[in-house]
View 1 (cartoon, helix red, strand yellow):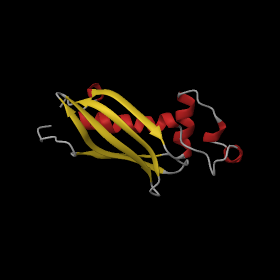
View 2 (cartoon, helix red, strand yellow):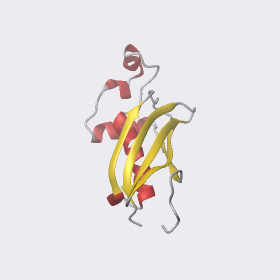
View 3 (cartoon, helix red, strand yellow):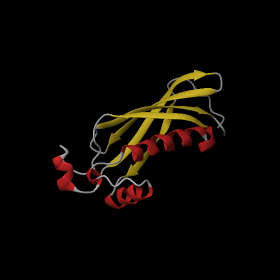
Length: 132
């Protein structure tokens, strides 16, 4: 990309529909069979109102947003996130953010993940280098 990037430049938001089939498939591929992700009754015994999206699946959304901004996965140096609230299965998650720091050729992105009902589910950062 040739546009000028400054602190405050927004990143393009990315979304993910976290339907039950996606949750089941992600759990199978990552060997995560914890019942809080698919069993509503069990999730309630753990204090949750419904089954919840895996934290690792939320992390992939942060990576996807950083990769998209960088111009490819090879531009992502690091990604970190902290979950703030459960994301119920069935919700659509959206990660948005902006450039928060520029250090030579590396840019730090400040990112937030909200559910479709406006709840802040996670916050994170990524360090990227532009490859495009």
